[in-house]
Figure 1 (cartoon, rainbow, N blue to C red):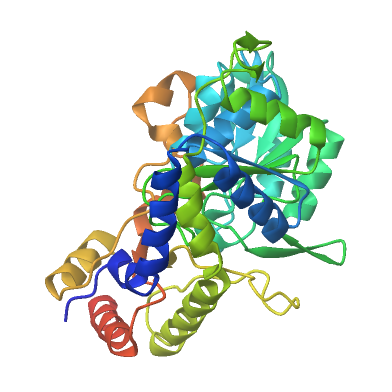
Figure 2 (cartoon, one colour):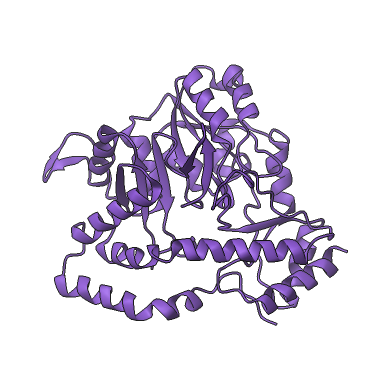
Length: 383
């Protein structure tokens, strides 16, 4: 049986008429940059994330970069983040001239550890001690929120601004001081990606920054448009980080289905849990289950730990099952970050995750028969 990692055609089919209709409307208007379509999506994303402001941008990477630039992050500054994440997290920091500094992850959720963050902030490696630690950038990996309460306490203690990399976690929830909060709404800025493979994906690149502070929202809006408050008048140097109207129109249609897609992914995750019970595969931890949260995990990826990961992946491939590895090389081991001075063994949990993790198909349109096939092959492969 063939089981793709993701089937976007299955998602597109039921929405085709509506999406084509709104695309035609944008084409007929010939208004492709900014305008009412982008503004409408910004309002709806802000409402969905329960924040007052949202700013559409050209990608999730540019959401991070624009947020950092609007905060004035640059040379001499340090941003504390995780080495186990997509490259854009640290890449956006480096592009400002600031220095990414890493703290290891929790072994169960793969999210950054507040205890390891505290160790770094209290006693940074000697080579980083002249830097100003300015930002804490947690990543809500694979669709589950970091443990934000201790991270926010750390940020207050060390006078850091929190930028949430929520690229994989739109709609994921967390209980903060007794209230339900959504990913992206707990720091100064929350950054989302609308890359096609995301739970809310466009027809190309796109992103969004959500914010609670009006002043910072203005800063991000200016930054996305070359730092211009009005045309041809530039107070700062920004970039061309604008969200296309065509992408906004498509995303507005898809946003209406997002909660249904989250529910389907949770259903599929529960089915895997039953099918793989007792196997040697270590299934995803749901850290915030049982806390009266509807979306304690949105499963942008369904990531398991398996022994001899590459051999298992090859067995699944031969049986028609697509898988993926997120991420085979932690950021502190990337060639472009060699100058930071990290070595193998500095972040053992991130390195272990890079060796052991494997993502299985989890998309909403996955059938029970397809999941049963995946589970049966995986059980045999790890036996």
